[in-house]
Image 1 (cartoon, rainbow, N blue to C red):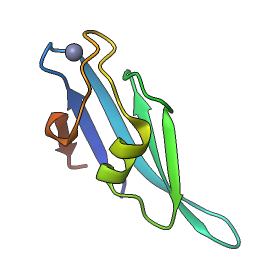
Image 2 (tube, rainbow, N blue to C red; image 1 turned 45 degrees about the horizontal axis):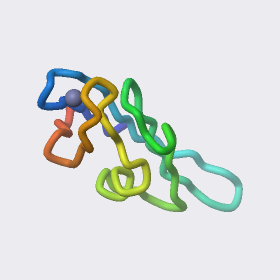
Image 3 (cartoon, rainbow, N blue to C red; image 1 turned 60 degrees about the horizontal axis):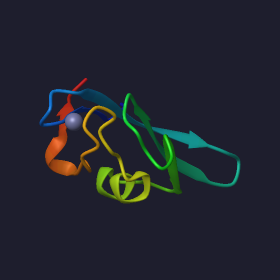
Image 4 (cartoon, rainbow, N blue to C red; image 1 turned 180 degrees about the vertical axis):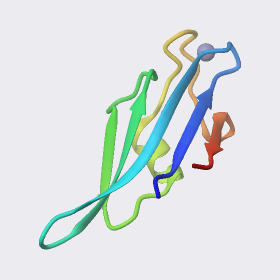
Length: 80
Ligand SMILES: [Zn+2]
């Protein structure tokens, strides 16, 4: 099951963040992909599991519309 978040800025801009795991023969990686959001990196990853808070800290998401720094308050989990 993938974790998916909708990101909604105060200005109305929306983006998304999605978690998935990648297994290699030696280790598992937790990966977050950001879409429609300005980030230092659109993809952040960590060995093992990566929480959404760690992903926000690493990616430093910024609204592409108004330039506001986005934090976990702008993230809405979508259960799928
Ligand atoms: Zn905005």
